[in-house]
Image 1 (cartoon, rainbow, N blue to C red):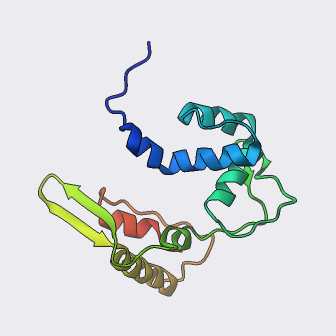
Image 2 (image 1 turned 90 degrees about the vertical axis):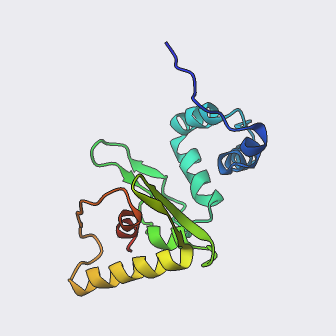
Length: 161
């Protein structure tokens, strides 16, 4: 039995959605109509792993990567290898092109008023945490574990480079 969605966006919102924009891009890139909705993209992602993820990488303007390598070089689980020879700084990509005055996060909890955090403030907080981790000797490749509530602080802790 298939459940029914609780909410479906109005057509105008769907037309302006990032996933719709990506589907158009992917259709032009591949010559196949991939604008049939989420399921169409999902099926393509399993049928053509390299084509799908290479299109995602290029569409969102991520840094140059070695083109002689497939997006998924090793499919073993565990041990899969994605985009070999590439390095990506998650925080740098999240903040790229953001207006410091724009709203990045609206935190809503049951026991307080909503809190809005701008991109500039979020960037400052992330940089502060990153600097503290560096002072403590944390280096690229290290793993840091934390137990945090679903909050702005958890978002800040997630993003240091």
